[in-house]
Length: 192
Image 1 (cartoon, rainbow, N blue to C red):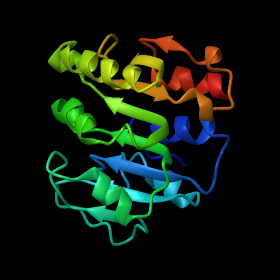
Image 2 (tube, helix red, strand yellow):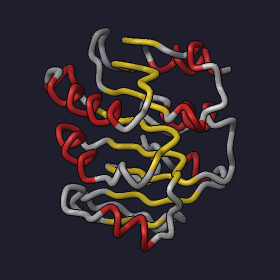
Image 3 (cartoon, rainbow, N blue to C red):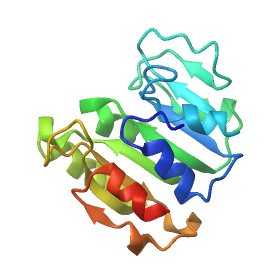
């Protein structure tokens, strides 16, 4: 059973060939289970960290939980204290209008992520935030595979997220899933 709101966990698990020993960074993790992008991965053998400034009980999770403001963290120090390698399997950023500001704080020059799902909520905030995110991630060599994702129960054309990969680490024909403006469930069907 997958837990993400828009199939992010299912996407990551499948694009990384059902890996069972992965490493995640879940920023804006919110509830430890419901709608969480890393809970399924953790149940599948992954380890990692979750960060959220809300009050949540992560005592039933094995990941390390940081109850902090995501814009006031030194991510390089956190990655160092957790002995993260320079290549990390998955980065999830889901902090609404602060996603671009959060992305800037992550040391992308030092760490690479095989898969990134990042919220931009362009249906609420316009194209400005997603354009900043896209400029940053493109500059660091990431490939935007699924652009302007929408999901039920959102209405059609309510785009809220992009899915990226660092293609050097992906063993999948990305042309099969490359898309714009699709429902997340449609993208998942192409993975199987």
